[in-house]
Length: 59
Image 1 (cartoon, helix red, strand yellow):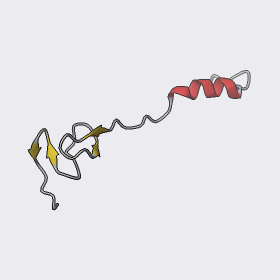
Image 2 (cartoon, rainbow, N blue to C red):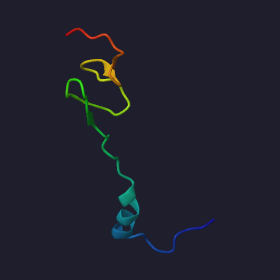
Image 3 (spheres, rainbow, N blue to C red):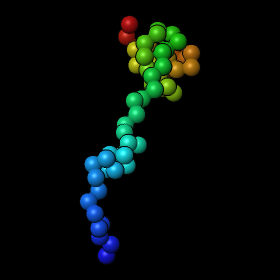
Image 4 (tube, rainbow, N blue to C red):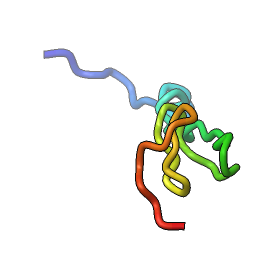
């Protein structure tokens, strides 16, 4: 079984982990109401998707 000969330094450990970070989700503006929403999702505030009403909302 392979065993490390030397302790991995904090610098090497952290350099290896630099790519393991969470990315923030992309946020777009709704063309109808201007609220922020996720791309390719219906707008939660006005209920439109691709200029069509897909969710009934009470305004």
